[in-house]
Amino acid sequence: MNDLGLDLKHVRTWFPHEQETPYVLVRVRDNQAKAWSDVLGIAVRRCYLTDALLTQSAASRKMGQPEVIDAKLPDAGSTMAGDFGEILVYLYQGAHEHPRVAFGATKWRLKQDRTKPAPHSDVVHLVLASWPTPSADDLVICSEVKTKSTGGAFRPIRSAIDDSLKDRTSRLTRTLVWLRERALTEDLGDIKLEHLDRFINATDHPEALKRFRAVAVVSADLVEAELADAPEEAPAEYTVVVISVPQLRATYTSVFDAARQAIAAAEAVIPV
Image (tube, rainbow, N blue to C red):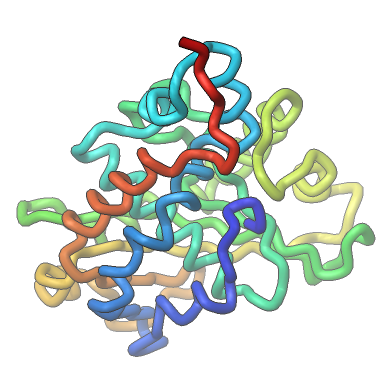
């Protein structure tokens, strides 16, 4: 996650745990959410487009960087909301492991269609205890993420719990293979081929640990009603996490507005 340019120790302070069991409840403070448009614009843009690729693409095509960025970021609507929820969990999950290094896959760079969600498991991190030596303490963390920013019948906690089963049965395995295939030709951020091989070629290494989460990112004004779907007893195979974000729709809109203007340091000069 170092390629996003964020201080993970500081990021961890954005996600205070109000409770740990039978589910984790995180309440983001209002002042933190309001500050995200100032501090997350570049990081969110880098989730879709590296500085190097942005600079190269703009220069080679003789166009401004904002135009290139627009071609990668989602339009306002459900895909933007879902992407923001996933990116927020990506930050939460990586920062929660700090100071251990959690290698994360910036899978939003791999989208074939910016108007649709990225395929396969939502958020994946690899924790390698004694890398480059494989260890029985190595860990893969996988989260299924559902986002609710406006009213309606959608039940994000129940939906995240139901879809988390897919990760635990087969989807995570397919996701790791897919990430390896894409890593052959594309930049996945921190995750490298050898990291993925450690978990894919399971018979060649000590058995790794797996941790699954069902995560609901919910606007703070809706969260109390949604908590009716939270478990009364902690599940054995996964952890339910609810992240309450003040004015979620306005928050993610302002962050993506900032991301659209988050050019690389040396913007291409366009000949006239």
